[in-house]
Length: 172
Image (cartoon, rainbow, N blue to C red; front, top):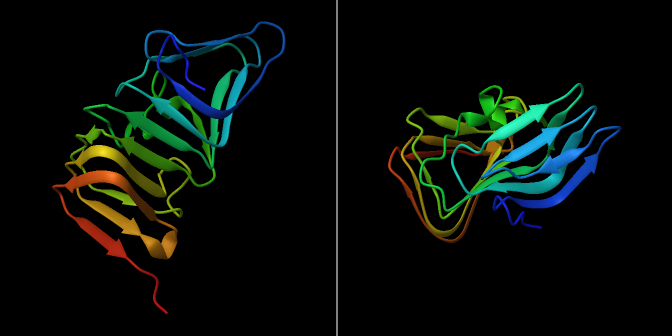
């Protein structure tokens, strides 16, 4: 499902609320207000069409929960791989659980620091990287730690990683 107002793609998004309710797009972001309002992305994809989506989460018990989900950016030129570690007003305000994936769909990351994809670094750290469709560019060094569940998916893309890629494979 795509929100026609904000371009947000939501698949398998569950919404539960009591009393006041509002779940909707504002510009190219997400607004969640009310008492005990939560949106849960469990095993689904939450996709934005800009690098810094506007997120308004207010109200007692309000929040967005990502569990074993994928955070995706489509057609974005300045994705910050570290945004999920941020705070209020960013995707860092989400509650992260389980093993999560970052998807770039014809997008570019400008994060300068190295990043390790693995499932043993906490739920806010992406375990998987998916580069799909068009050209995807990453300017930082990447480590895909397969011995700790790190995954990489390339599909229908030209992927450019200027900082280099290190693959860690499990010993047998």
